[in-house]
Image (tube, rainbow, N blue to C red):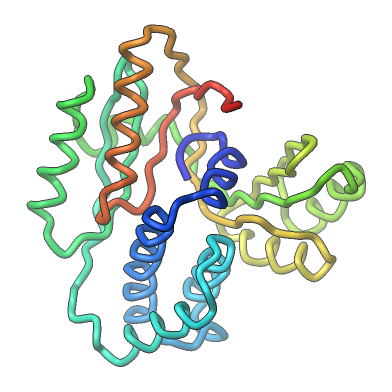
Length: 245
């Protein structure tokens, strides 16, 4: 879920190894523990939980796993109190990075995040040092294999609260205000579209291109280590990542 190459990230998730899938389940489980404690276990009365269930399904989390996670959180079996923390800093050559975490040990998480930035040519900054470069938006990704009509999708999306759309051969990316995300996702699903992902995202206003081989390697390793950490929920950046073959 990093950067602006959303569809590439979704494809990588679908092709992920079992180990990566297990980490995704762990991260979603933490989010569920928080939103169930905040708003209760009924998705009909807890919009955040409803959105999270949709996110879990888009990441191929089995229904029985989702139900088990909700019951665990509702029954108080998860004794951990997760703190929401956001770290901001710079990767190689000034790439802006935002790291969103849920942790039961603030000191451990802070030390880990700082270590990654230091090790891979970046530096951790203070709150607000890069967030001004990003705007929080809702992003809905639709799957298609060339069968969708661009004008029809645009009309349907705008009717349901979409603000902007990018249409290519494999996917459609629709951007909306964060508060319009649930309605847009549900409305498009009701109209028969295949929603691959619907999440809030930090969209950068400008992008940084890396050409130095050392910078490219270190930026890739920084993102890899951040996303591999169980405490890290999301990583957003403004690296104009090269297209994957």
